[in-house]
Image (tube, rainbow, N blue to C red; front, side, top):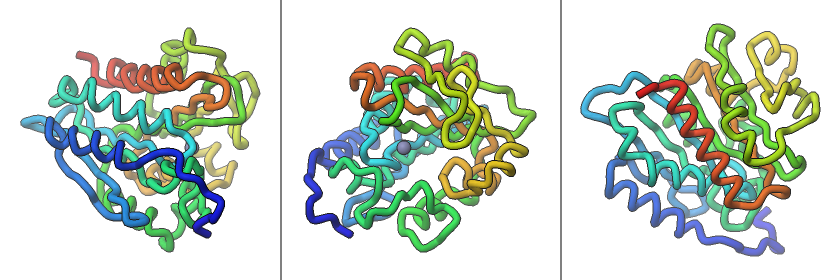
Length: 258
Ligand SMILES: [Zn+2]
């Protein structure tokens, strides 16, 4: 599509400068491929020996959800060094650089990448799968935003034997703003801001492996995923960034007690 009317609102180079600064500190990795001639990064954090947990962190799937990009960067910049040895990290900070620059949910061809993980046709999907499909993570934590609602919610996708994180994460951010009040989101039941999805519900829902967290789940890459969704229209940017940050820090406290 390369939408003619698209207006560039942000500069992906600003994010790249911050990724490169992280690589100069405690992170390894770097550009793992190119989308629309822009580098897509895969960064890792490792201690001297394997940490008790290994997580995948993601943001930037949808370009019009900027608090996710920025919160993930702040988390890595502020907490990265402290986490070395406590949790091993793989980070995919932005798979949709064009969307970030033009404030679009979709990629430059007008495609929602997060509905395409059952296909190999999309470059972004091939890139993610090539990097991740033979890996195994204790947690996949990703940051999104939702413009439609005034309350915060999160998706938790897990094997039934995994302990739930969602209710404690909601309690940790309750003071930031209203929690999502409706009984369902995207066809999943929601209780007090948590859409808790285990295999029987996922089978009934029928969305399959189209979104990245569900592809990771069904491919056995991560049996526990948290998708944090801040209200992009109703909360200011600082609050949304602080909320994602708090979710990340509380995952650390809950899963890797010091
Ligand atoms: Zn999103």
